[in-house]
Amino acid sequence: MIELIANKYTQALRQALNPQELAQAMEALEALCALYNHPDFLEVISSPHYPDSLKQEILESFLECKEDKLHNLIRLLVLHKRLNLLPLIYNTLKTQAQREENIYQGYLYSNQEISLEQVQQLASKASAHFNISLKLKALHQNKEGMRLIIPDLEVEIAFYKENYFNQLKQHIMQAV
Image 1 (cartoon, rainbow, N blue to C red):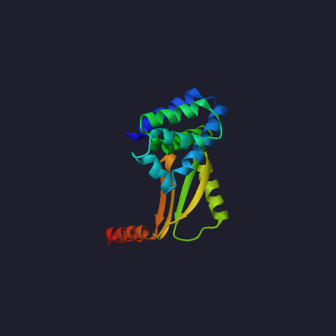
Image 2 (spheres, helix red, strand yellow):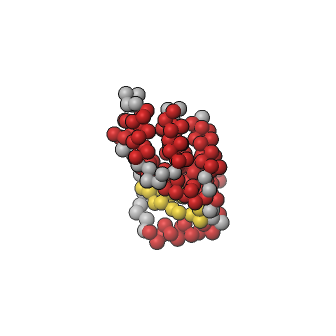
Image 3 (tube, helix red, strand yellow):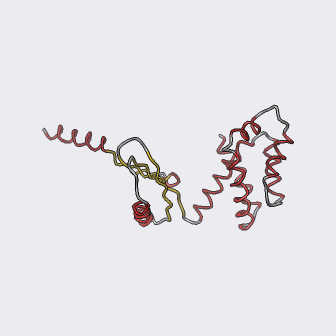
Protein backbone atom coordinates (compact mmCIF):
# COMPACT_ATOMS: atom_id res chain seq x y z
CA MET A 1 0.00 0.00 0.00
CA ILE A 2 2.82 2.38 0.91
CA GLU A 3 4.51 1.64 -2.42
CA LEU A 4 1.36 2.64 -4.30
CA ILE A 5 1.20 5.97 -2.49
CA ALA A 6 4.91 6.60 -3.14
CA ASN A 7 4.37 5.75 -6.82
CA LYS A 8 1.67 8.44 -7.05
CA TYR A 9 4.09 11.06 -5.72
CA THR A 10 6.82 9.76 -8.03
CA GLN A 11 4.58 10.01 -11.09
CA ALA A 12 3.55 13.52 -10.12
CA LEU A 13 7.19 14.59 -9.79
CA ARG A 14 8.13 13.04 -13.14
CA GLN A 15 5.26 14.87 -14.84
CA ALA A 16 5.94 18.20 -13.14
CA LEU A 17 9.70 18.34 -13.79
CA ASN A 18 11.65 18.42 -17.03
CA PRO A 19 14.66 16.04 -17.28
CA GLN A 20 17.19 18.61 -16.06
CA GLU A 21 15.02 19.64 -13.11
CA LEU A 22 14.39 15.97 -12.33
CA ALA A 23 18.13 15.28 -12.17
CA GLN A 24 18.59 18.22 -9.78
CA ALA A 25 15.62 17.10 -7.71
CA MET A 26 17.04 13.59 -7.45
CA GLU A 27 20.35 14.97 -6.15
CA ALA A 28 18.50 17.02 -3.55
CA LEU A 29 16.34 14.04 -2.57
CA GLU A 30 19.43 11.86 -2.26
CA ALA A 31 20.88 14.33 0.25
CA LEU A 32 17.60 14.37 2.19
CA CYS A 33 17.38 10.59 2.20
CA ALA A 34 20.86 10.37 3.69
CA LEU A 35 19.42 12.10 6.76
CA TYR A 36 17.03 9.21 7.26
CA ASN A 37 19.99 7.03 8.30
CA HIS A 38 20.49 9.09 11.47
CA PRO A 39 18.41 7.94 14.46
CA ASP A 40 18.10 11.46 15.90
CA PHE A 41 16.64 12.76 12.65
CA LEU A 42 14.21 9.84 12.46
CA GLU A 43 13.11 10.53 16.00
CA VAL A 44 12.28 14.16 15.18
CA ILE A 45 10.49 13.26 11.93
CA SER A 46 8.38 10.47 13.40
CA SER A 47 7.66 12.07 16.76
CA PRO A 48 4.22 13.61 17.28
CA HIS A 49 5.75 15.89 19.95
CA TYR A 50 7.45 18.12 17.37
CA PRO A 51 5.30 20.47 15.31
CA ASP A 52 4.95 19.84 11.59
CA SER A 53 6.30 23.32 10.84
CA LEU A 54 9.61 22.39 12.53
CA LYS A 55 9.84 19.18 10.52
CA GLN A 56 9.19 21.11 7.32
CA GLU A 57 11.81 23.76 8.22
CA ILE A 58 14.40 21.08 8.94
CA LEU A 59 13.85 19.33 5.62
CA GLU A 60 13.72 22.54 3.61
CA SER A 61 16.91 23.82 5.23
CA PHE A 62 18.78 20.88 3.68
CA LEU A 63 17.51 21.67 0.19
CA GLU A 64 20.27 23.52 -1.65
CA CYS A 65 18.19 24.32 -4.69
CA LYS A 66 15.29 26.67 -4.31
CA GLU A 67 13.06 24.52 -6.51
CA ASP A 68 9.48 25.34 -5.62
CA LYS A 69 8.22 21.93 -6.65
CA LEU A 70 10.43 20.12 -4.13
CA HIS A 71 9.35 22.54 -1.41
CA ASN A 72 5.74 21.85 -2.41
CA LEU A 73 6.40 18.11 -2.22
CA ILE A 74 7.75 18.48 1.30
CA ARG A 75 4.81 20.67 2.32
CA LEU A 76 2.42 18.08 0.92
CA LEU A 77 4.17 15.22 2.72
CA VAL A 78 4.14 17.17 5.98
CA LEU A 79 0.48 18.05 5.55
CA HIS A 80 -0.53 14.42 5.05
CA LYS A 81 1.99 13.14 7.64
CA ARG A 82 3.84 11.04 5.08
CA LEU A 83 7.43 12.15 5.61
CA ASN A 84 8.44 8.50 5.94
CA LEU A 85 7.72 8.13 2.20
CA LEU A 86 10.57 10.40 1.10
CA PRO A 87 13.24 7.65 0.83
CA LEU A 88 10.79 5.40 -0.98
CA ILE A 89 9.94 8.18 -3.45
CA TYR A 90 13.64 8.75 -4.10
CA ASN A 91 14.34 5.03 -4.58
CA THR A 92 11.44 4.72 -7.01
CA LEU A 93 12.65 7.74 -8.99
CA LYS A 94 16.17 6.33 -9.07
CA THR A 95 14.96 2.91 -10.21
CA GLN A 96 12.85 4.42 -12.99
CA ALA A 97 15.73 6.61 -14.18
CA GLN A 98 18.07 3.62 -14.26
CA ARG A 99 15.55 1.57 -16.22
CA GLU A 100 15.28 4.30 -18.82
CA GLU A 101 19.07 4.28 -19.18
CA ASN A 102 19.12 0.44 -19.07
CA ILE A 103 21.36 0.47 -15.98
CA TYR A 104 20.65 -1.97 -13.18
CA GLN A 105 22.09 -2.58 -9.73
CA GLY A 106 23.05 -6.12 -8.78
CA TYR A 107 24.31 -7.70 -5.58
CA LEU A 108 26.84 -10.52 -5.38
CA TYR A 109 26.79 -12.39 -2.08
CA SER A 110 29.68 -14.67 -1.18
CA ASN A 111 31.33 -16.13 1.88
CA GLN A 112 34.78 -15.42 0.41
CA GLU A 113 36.52 -12.19 -0.47
CA ILE A 114 36.07 -11.50 -4.19
CA SER A 115 38.55 -9.29 -6.03
CA LEU A 116 37.38 -6.19 -7.85
CA GLU A 117 38.59 -7.70 -11.13
CA GLN A 118 36.44 -10.81 -10.63
CA VAL A 119 33.39 -8.69 -9.79
CA GLN A 120 33.90 -6.58 -12.92
CA GLN A 121 34.37 -9.69 -15.05
CA LEU A 122 31.16 -11.22 -13.70
CA ALA A 123 29.32 -7.92 -14.21
CA SER A 124 30.44 -7.72 -17.85
CA LYS A 125 29.38 -11.31 -18.54
CA ALA A 126 25.98 -10.81 -16.90
CA SER A 127 25.57 -7.49 -18.73
CA ALA A 128 26.22 -9.19 -22.05
CA HIS A 129 23.84 -12.04 -21.22
CA PHE A 130 20.94 -9.79 -20.20
CA ASN A 131 21.81 -6.98 -22.66
CA ILE A 132 21.96 -4.36 -19.90
CA SER A 133 24.50 -2.25 -18.04
CA LEU A 134 25.04 -3.83 -14.64
CA LYS A 135 26.63 -2.34 -11.56
CA LEU A 136 27.57 -5.08 -9.11
CA LYS A 137 28.11 -4.65 -5.42
CA ALA A 138 29.94 -7.46 -3.61
CA LEU A 139 28.59 -8.31 -0.15
CA HIS A 140 29.57 -10.90 2.45
CA GLN A 141 27.28 -13.71 3.62
CA ASN A 142 27.78 -16.59 6.03
CA LYS A 143 26.38 -19.32 3.81
CA GLU A 144 29.01 -21.20 1.78
CA GLY A 145 28.54 -20.43 -1.91
CA MET A 146 27.62 -17.52 -4.17
CA ARG A 147 24.42 -15.71 -5.10
CA LEU A 148 23.84 -13.00 -7.70
CA ILE A 149 20.66 -10.93 -7.37
CA ILE A 150 19.38 -8.27 -9.77
CA PRO A 151 16.20 -7.07 -8.00
CA ASP A 152 14.77 -4.88 -10.76
CA LEU A 153 14.93 -7.75 -13.25
CA GLU A 154 13.78 -10.25 -10.62
CA VAL A 155 16.80 -12.43 -11.36
CA GLU A 156 18.54 -14.60 -8.80
CA ILE A 157 21.35 -17.00 -9.64
CA ALA A 158 22.71 -19.05 -6.77
CA PHE A 159 25.22 -21.82 -6.28
CA TYR A 160 25.53 -23.23 -2.78
CA LYS A 161 27.77 -26.10 -1.86
CA GLU A 162 25.14 -27.61 0.45
CA ASN A 163 22.46 -27.59 -2.27
CA TYR A 164 24.87 -29.12 -4.78
CA PHE A 165 25.64 -32.07 -2.49
CA ASN A 166 21.95 -32.56 -1.64
CA GLN A 167 21.06 -32.69 -5.33
CA LEU A 168 23.96 -35.07 -6.00
CA LYS A 169 22.76 -37.38 -3.21
CA GLN A 170 19.21 -37.35 -4.60
CA HIS A 171 20.50 -38.16 -8.08
CA ILE A 172 22.55 -41.10 -6.76
CA MET A 173 19.61 -42.39 -4.70
CA GLN A 174 17.32 -42.26 -7.75
CA ALA A 175 19.91 -44.09 -9.86
CA VAL A 176 20.16 -46.93 -7.32
